[in-house]
Image (cartoon, rainbow over all chains, first blue to last red; front, top):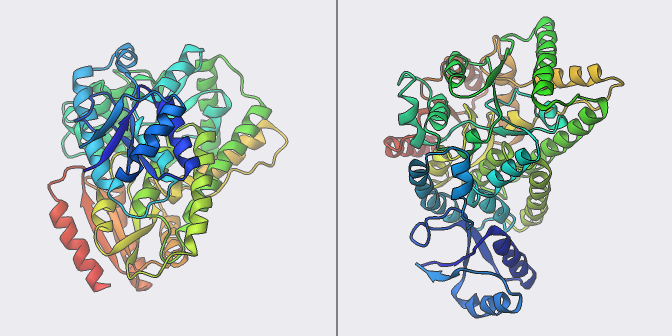
Length: 71
Length: 419
C-alpha cells in the first residue's frame, strides 16, 4: 500500500514539496498512478505516520490538493 | 497533475493513442525507479521531470513558441547545442526509447532496423510525442545509414535539416565539420531571424560547459566504491539532460552531487560487481539493461555511450578573439566524440580501457541495439583489446521488447559469477 497526494497543478505540488523538505518530512515525487487519475503529472508519496502533520501543513499554507489517497 | 489535454490538442496530437502511452509510464517508473532503496533525496527533482515529462516541459516549449521562440529537435550528440542556445532556440533530444512506437515505425521502415530509429519515426508519424509535435525544425545528421535514410522519411512529415557528419577524423574532416557548423548556423539564423554574435556564442559555450562539468562531477562520484548513486539513477540524469532547461538542470545536478558527496563517507562496502556499459545510446524510457543488471548483484558505474560519457567529456574551449575562433573550438570539441560511425575509431577502444581503469570495473557489458551495424561490427576490435587487458566482456544485443528479459538476466548472472 502507498499513500499519494494529488494536486490540481504542479505548482501546488512543488510548494508542498519544499515545505515538507523544510520540515524534514520525507516524501517522493512520483508520476500520478492511473488508478487515481488519467491526467499525467506529479503526485507525492508519503509515509502513514506523517499524514496528520502533512494535512496540517496543507491547511496552514492553503496548498491546493485534489486529495489524499491510499492504494 | 495539470490537465494538458488542450495543449496536446493544439499540437495536433492523437489524444487517444497518446493516452495509451501515458498509461504505461507511472507503473513502469514505479517498478524500475521508485522501488530502489536508499536513493538520494535530490532525485526528487528528476522524479518530478519524469512525472511532468509530457506536461510542464511541453508547456514551457509552448510558452517559448508563443513568444516567437523556436524549438529544434535533434537526434545525436554531434549536433552542437551551443549554436541553438546562442540563437535563443530550445533544443530537445528526440531519440525514442519506447517499444510503444515500434509498430508505427515499422509501417514505413524495414523491421530489421535498429529500434531507436523505428521508435523515433514511429513517435512522429503516430503524433503521440509532444516533443516532436513542438518542434519547428528537426535536425538530423549523417551518422549511420539507418538514420540518414530515415530523415528522408521524416522530412515528408515535418521540416527536416540534415548535417553532413564526416566519417573520418583527418585534419580535412575537422575542417569540413567546421564548415558544416557554419552552414548549420545560417540555417538556424534563417529559422529565427536572429544573427549569431560573438557574445551570445561565448555565453552559450560557457553555459553548456557548466552543464557538462556538472555531469562530469556526477560521474566522478561514481568512481567511489561503492558508488553513491545507482546506474539507473545516473542514466536517468543523463537522459533528462537532453531535453530539460539547461540552467535548471545544471543546478539540480549540482544539488544531487552535493548530497552524494556527503553520502560517500557513510557508505559501507558491499560485494556488488562494478560494471561498465559501452555501446549504443539508451533513450528514455529505455532502462531495460540497467534494471535487469542492478537487480542482480551488480552496480553499473559508468556508461561509455552517447547517453553517458560521450555526452559530457571534453569542454569547448572558451578562448578565442573572434566568432570563427569559437566555431573552430566547437568543431574541435565535437570531433573528439568517438562514435562507431567513424573509421577508424581507435579512440573509442582507448576510452573504454581508460574508463575501465578509472572506474575500477570488474567487467564490461557491450550493449548493442539490435541491427545497429557500426557498433556490432566494432565489437570485435573492442573484444580483442579488452582480452589483451584481461577485462571480462559480455555482449548483449537486444531491442526494447521485454521478450528476452529472462534470457538476458540469465546471461548477466552467469557473467557475474564468472568475474
